[in-house]
Structure formats: C-alpha cells, structure tokens
Amino acid sequence: MSYKKGVEVLPAHLLKEIQEYIDGGLIYIPKKSKRVGWGHLNGSKKLLEKRNEKIFELYKNGIAIDEIANRYYLSEETIRKIVYGKKQL
Image (cartoon, rainbow, N blue to C red):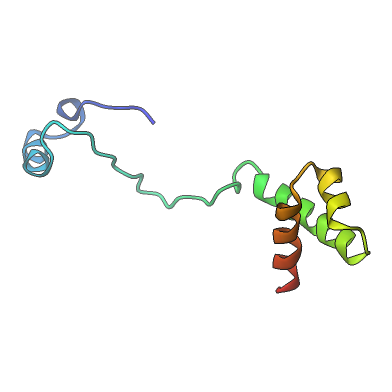
C-alpha cells in the first residue's frame, strides 16, 4: 500500500469535507473492486486443501496422528483440527 497526499489526489471541496471528520490523521480508503479471498490468487488455498485431503486419507487408513504430524512437520493439534474438521463434512 502506498500513501498519497490528499491535497494531490482529492478535489479541494472533498478534502475540506474529509477534514471535518479526520483532520491530519491517516485514513484507509478501500479499493472499489471486491477483494479476493486468501490464497486464491497464488494457489496457496488449493495447495493446503490438497495437503489436508492427503492427511485425512492417511488418518482414514489407520495412520496415527503423531506419525502424520511428523511426516508433515505439523503439530498433533493441527492434525487433529484437520482430521476432525473433515469428519464433519
């Protein structure tokens, strides 16, 4: 995110109106376009979903949670969250 000076990008009348609400402070103005969810643009979300499916399959096939955790370098608690979350679907 880059900062712009209000005086350089806003018309004078709009700048004066904004100063009535926030004078000399910082304000974030969101983009017009809708935000894309986390991981959609770079594929991270799909990779994690595939990983979690593999973890669930291992669990269904009788592999112990501690062994799965060691294979994926995750905590046992994280594996439990993945496995028990998938069970409910």
